[in-house]
Image (cartoon, rainbow, N blue to C red):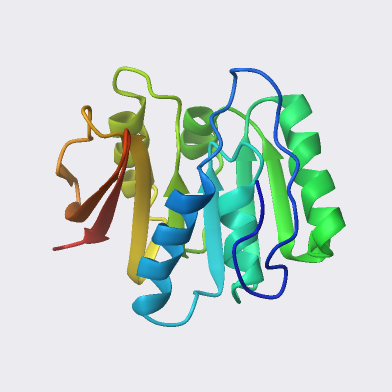
Length: 184
């Protein structure tokens, strides 16, 4: 696994061992960021929920985002995010929270919005729909921002979550990316 492009392009990332996480494949991440950068410059702030190795938020930083907030519940995996940020030299641009995403979204979401919010929960029943509802309820998306959800292509999230509406869906093998915007 590596950073695809930008200031850290080509640099390798550590990934958690075992089945607890499912890192986004390089080709899916490359396609995702091609879509995002075709829409304009990276936003100031990005949020990486269910962060795993932190690859999505770190890729955003490499491409020009100024700050990334990572939320991951596994303590060992949080240490991998920290190590990846340190090795890429972007520690000062990162905030890393060790918490269950649902708990964090309910109790302590930040008051500032994000331009890109990445959701990559375990491919389980309705975890993604619950997270999308909580992201909408916490009003975390800045004007013109996107929420990008990675999921198994057969079991996509609902198309509407409060103010968030599905605007695009792309399939890459068994993986799909669903893009949500406010009021579309």
